Amino acid sequence: MPSVWMTDNQKIGVIFCSGGGLFLFGGVLMFFDRSLLAMGNILFLIGLTLIIGLEKTLAFFSRRQKLKGTAAFVAGILLILIRWPLIGFFVELYGLFILFGDFLVTIGQFAGNIPVVGPYIRSALETLAGGRRNAELPV
Image (cartoon, rainbow, N blue to C red; front, side, top):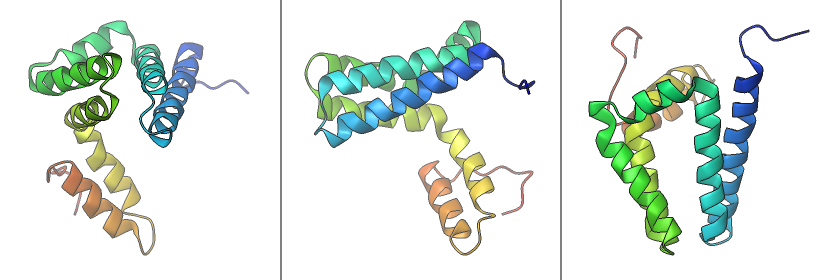
């Protein structure tokens, strides 16, 4: 049965993003291996571009309120490539939290429905996101 809500390019993009996450995880497990971290970044960026499209990706990274996160993300990638993987990874992680911090609240709202641990996950993700909460959703 064909999937209506995802195109083939988007499905391939999800695979690329997943592979990028696995490479990044493997790079951290291998004590910040430079080549695994670089490959994870490349796969993540290719996957994101395939999921939302080139124009929307460029628009997302070049928005005025996201420029600080974009600069940190790119600086982290460059630090990894010039053989400072530990520092580069943490600079890149900071940039990712700035870029995708708004999505943490959405994930927290979803995870808040999990019995017993849900409220703790929600509050932890909202704290990571800098206390940003969606006004239309109840707390």
